[in-house]
Amino acid sequence: MVEPLGDDYPLLVIVGPTSAGKSVLALALAERLDGEIINCDSVQVFRGFNIGAGKVPPDERRGIPHHLLDMVEPDQVFTAGDYRREALRALVNVRKRGKLPIVVGGTGLYLRALLLGLFAGPPRSEVVRERLRAMAHRRGREFLHRLLRRLDPTTAARIHPRDTQKIIRAVEVCLVARQPLSAMLARGRGGLRGFRVFRVGLSPERRQLSARINARVEHMFAHGLLDEARATLERTQGCGRDLQPLRALGYRQACAALRGELSREEAVRKTQTATRQYAKRQTTWFRRETDVAWFPGFGDDPEMQRQILAWLRQAWPAAASAAPTSAYPIHPTQTCDGQDP
Image 1 (cartoon, helix red, strand yellow):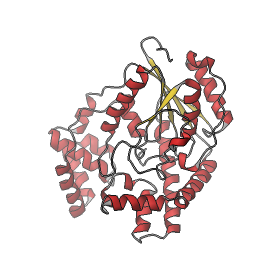
Image 2 (cartoon, one colour; image 1 turned 135 degrees about the horizontal axis):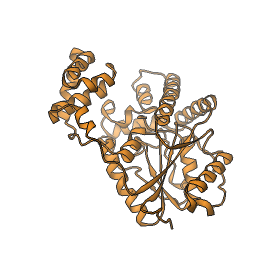
Image 3 (tube, one colour; image 1 turned 90 degrees about the vertical axis):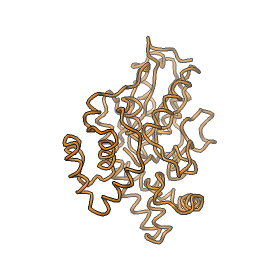
Image 4 (cartoon, one colour; image 1 turned 30 degrees about the vertical axis):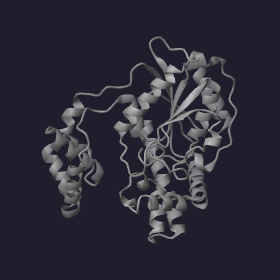
């Protein structure tokens, strides 16, 4: 039973790049500290996305409850706002059971939404978005960026002219809310309350991480990623280009191979390259987060696990009675993260 720290309840967050072993570390700490795991990966929320999304198989979860997995169908839209709502519900339920909530995953946008909150902007307007997409296709994304500069110069200054997705969202907000996005952001957002957050970050050596990424990508293509992507396309009547999870790393390249645009070998190489680049972006993103205790290794390393548990003993007195944790064998399908940093 976890006891509150004054008015706050402990919450452990594990971050780091893809293939760093976050899921294995979360399992080890959850078993030792009476915890439950809350997913923070933008692809693992979708049903039927297992191999490329790196879900820990149910028979390898050691009886530890996992939350926010397999929540929505692949043809549904799931936003950072949706994630925050569901994660808050999971946190409340874990807290009622007196367990330690452990948030783990590599989607930085989801984590930031949970901990810092989201600005009170308007809901998505697919009608407006579709018009803006058509405008970008017809007149170019630079035209949309010029439009954003007229509507909201402050926001336009911080969004790259080639980042079409962010430009469309910013213009959409300005048009629907009838005020600049920057003005709404300036009013602040409501962060997470009632929890004391302990942040752990994994930062393995880059060459070793790249080797793990390459091996993991080869493993997932050899063990059914193409079949998983094909099954999704068949289930959704081939509308893969429009599905949020099929735009994720691995799935995007697998679909290209299924359409004959890439050979299997090309799909593997492109996924490896894109995943290494993504891991670099993740590291940059999480390094900007405050109060993260960084550890220079992989989550399946027994020494890293001992060091992290020792740090927790110092930061959270209730963890002092926990015995040193043992490592769980890492499995290549347990270390992939979603597409967004």
